[in-house]
Image (cartoon, rainbow, N blue to C red; front, side, top):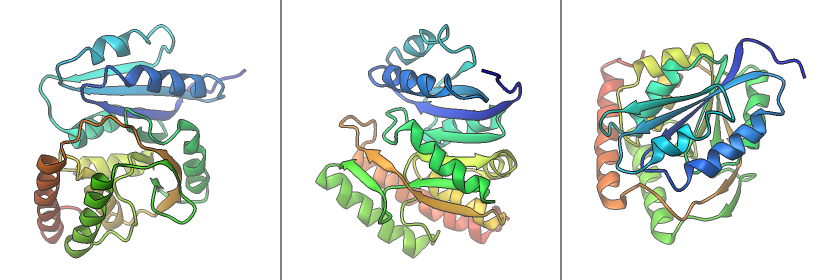
Length: 245
């Protein structure tokens, strides 16, 4: 198989205390990439933590020579980690995905389709009619998600049904501009980057994907929900201040 020399696809994975899940995720992604005819790279950004995530990731370096490990000295947040990985990536296309791979990696083909159609950004969605949610979140997490979306619409209207699905794809020029302006380091960064893309005039397509909830999560419902709410007001302020234009 002839492989194109330039990196076409960069996959960025933020990881915080993910020693139990990151191995299976890397195996699936590597298996997917090894049958493709384009050059790709995987960038795992380890966000501090107290477990053996770094060691687990390093054990896959021999299986995939373009596996990059970036380590934050202290826990900086998911948004910070994604931003760092994206801005250090080299691909013409950049995908970021969660460490639990709740959306199967093959679903990226659906995002590629819309990028090929002329969109600058394509994002996975669990909330469209055609979305396939095969394993649902707990009742409390679903309720918190619905509440977040209602508050989101009141404070920062993005026009998307699902801003929080961790499966988003950017063309290189869009990724560079959007993430250079990102200022939110926590979980609300998804809202911010979508708003930045909108203010920068980029076309974004929301795409239905398959999604399987992982029973384990590093999200603390009460604490992180409060921080996300605070970040929504920060995003609103930054937007009014024209920092995203």
